[in-house]
Length: 212
Image (cartoon, rainbow, N blue to C red; front, side, top):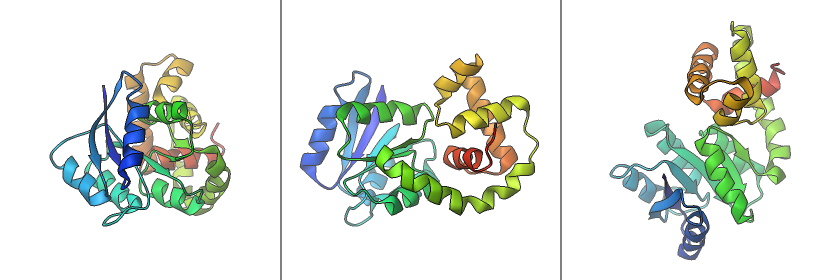
């Protein structure tokens, strides 16, 4: 069961999201928060697997909350959800470690699919935003150049390429006939070798340097 924390300052929106997510038998909304600070307070007492986070909220906004949560609980997956088709929000969220970015106008099936994608290690970016975000992410990724000369094995290069294609750990394991645990271990080793922080940076690195 995937435990979800909804962080949204409008109660009616939270209720709607809860109804949508709990249509799936494997997803349960265990907690709700109306701002980022409230979410942090909840996490200190109750652990969750996944957070669906609004951007514009009082007290502590979604970007700042993502930064603080990822610093303390890096294993928790965070999907940023907003009504604003603004690539700057997406850039900030991904820089702080968010696992995806969707607009609130997304269909209900896409929201549920995004939960599974993020939980499997995928990077979910709304198609209307991706076209603008990826070029800017690549422009800002010059600090990853040092990783080019790192000696990666043939398998690690292949996994890096597949991460760059946006594939989840499950999809990679199927493509390479490896267990999901082996894929996870390889990605951990790749991050250690390259000095990259997380899967998002690895995906950007793979695209920027045309890893194949």
